Structures are given as structure tokens and as C-alpha cells.
Image 1 (spheres, chains in turn yellow, blue):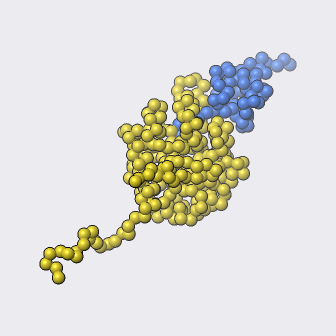
Image 2 (cartoon, one colour):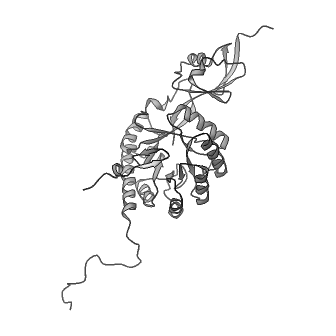
Length: 265
Length: 72
């Protein structure tokens, strides 16, 4: 009998438990109805949102809260677009005020072209926010030492990238991600870079606790189908990891017995 | 010197003239915003809903009105 993994193996982060290991963003969708359907298909419980100015001329985008039921989704505010620790702390505070929990997906970006994190700023902002009672999920690069420092600073989860934000290049350094996972006690949720379902599956096969993605779903030709594929890929990768893969060999080993072949002695 | 009946404040980066002695709650009403749906930052300090009516907007103040939008 098969059991849906999502029902048997929950993911605990901070004081919360989540049923899905797939976290999804809400940016870049063609329209809100497509986003809503994609979120449904993804099975995600944690969805990220951003804090931005209200459009006082009302020419576009109303609040995301019109489209996301906080009873159903866990809204994780991010600090995307922040280039200093101080700016990220300011956005985190606004996000906590706008939202329903004290979790923050902390980003401190260091470079406009690659959107790679400024790890010094990230560590400083983590320390400040942890002292203020935030539960910090820190978006970082795939560097073990930074990941360890973030854990020491009190992050409830560390979120190394698979590849740059929005690149869709997939998991560039499985070794680094495995190393981070093997050395940290807090959950490791890979954030950014996944491009398609196989990327998500391979990433989960490294043993990480979850994946956060946005562009791979939002920019797919059919976001709803891709969201469903990602849901299955994350679950497949997790189950394969738990199942334990066979060893890699440089030589073939027959699957069929040689014993009992005709003309044998 | 008589005080001006108006104050000049910067709301979401835009210089805006408002009647003097108004509160942050008045400011939200002016833009037809539900106090439950936006977060108000007044001179870099977050002002929670119960304090909006009692916080007066002064000349030169900086006000940010934010909410959740889509993001990754």
C-alpha cells in the first residue's frame, strides 16, 4: 500500500509544522487566477509574499491578501530587493506587522547582476531580527561556513541557493548542498534556481528538507501543470532519498541470473 | 505668525499637501485605505492600528503605506 508522504512526514521549522516540503512564491504570475490555481496544484502550505508600497493611484495590484487565505496558507514575508542589513530589517518589521506570524524569509542581496547574497549583511540582519523575536529563514549561497554561522546566529532554517534567483539553472553544486545538510541541525530548504521538475527531484534527493521556488512555476508555459509536476517531483525526490539509492558502479552487473542457462555445467 | 491650514508631507515618496492637524487615520481615509489592510510607517516608526487616530501628521513628515504583493 502506498501512503502519501506528505501525510506521514511533516516538516518542523521553528515552532511550526508544515505538511508540504514545497514552498512557493507568488511573484511574476500572468494574473491572480492563474496564481491561485498554481498554488492549489502545488499543494504548498508556505507561500512567500513581499512588502511594497500601496499604489495610491490604484492603477494596479491590490493586496495579495485578497487572493491568499491566511487560514489556508502560511504567509512568509520576504525581504527581497534589500541591499543592506538595515533595509532588510526595516522590511522584515513591516512584513511582520502586515502578516500573521513572526517568520521572515531574509534576503540581503549583494549584487544586482547575480542577486547573490551579501553574507555579511545577512548575518548582521539575522542577529538583529533573532533578538527581536523573529524566526529567520535565511536565503544564502551554498557556502557551508556561512550556513553554520547563520545557524549559530539563531536562524530557524537555512536556505542555500541551487543556482541564482530566477536563473532556472538547476542544482549547480550538489556536493555543497549535501555538505550543508549533513552539518546543520536546523532544516535546510533550498531556495532559488530550480528550473523544472527533474531539478526539484535531484535537489530533494540530496536529503534537504524542502525547496522554495517561484519562477520555475510562474514562468512555465503552463504554470498549473508545472506546479503539479513540482509537487510530485519534490515528493519523489524525498522518497527516493529516504529509500536510499543503489551504489554507483563503473561496471555492469546483470539483473538476470546466469545460473540455469542452457549448456552450462 | 499664523499657522498654515496645510502641511506638506511625503507619502510613499510623493510630496502631498494635507489639512493641518490631521491624524494618520485621517490620512488613510483620504486615500480610501482600510486601516486593516495596510501597514503605516511614520518617520521610520511603525504605527499600529490603535494608535493611528491619536498620531498627528506634521509638516515635513515621511509616511510609508505598505501591503503584501506577490514575491518569491
